Image 1 (cartoon, rainbow, N blue to C red):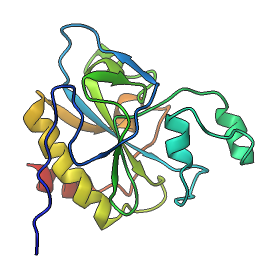
Image 2 (cartoon, rainbow, N blue to C red):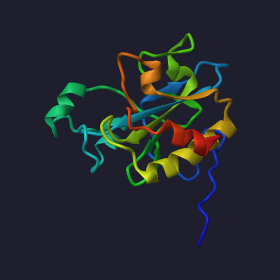
Image 3 (tube, rainbow, N blue to C red):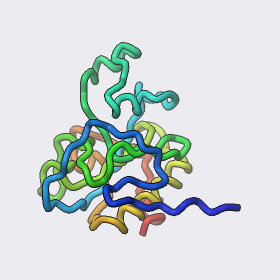
Length: 184
């Protein structure tokens, strides 16, 4: 039995073991601002559908807005995340950690506005209504551990924690205790 490849980040913040699909939906972080926060999200497109590559297409500005009626409600948005973990645990990286991904929107954490400036966004393929898979936690935990080693991370929070009243993800089925036990 072979051991999984160790995770490592290069100087730009690309993870060695992730599939890299660069997104144009990013920009420079403010100079001198440390990466202190990991934000966990959930996403599926259309909502509740886990097969296909619609999320990838959204994050790379290639979504066919006419492919599903739901897409009209998000038409022309420009969003991304640093990482996306599929239901099978596969890990895709869209933005290097050194850059600011557009994942948090209007947000605040401990009195600091614009969480995109100082956070790393991790999207889990899912919804608020369903549990996440064992494979997703098996990918998420080592990723969080690696990010904590590489950056002065102060907290791991949900999108709902930084955009209360506007966002609910990762939702009530996300097992925070499990993540904490696997990353402490």
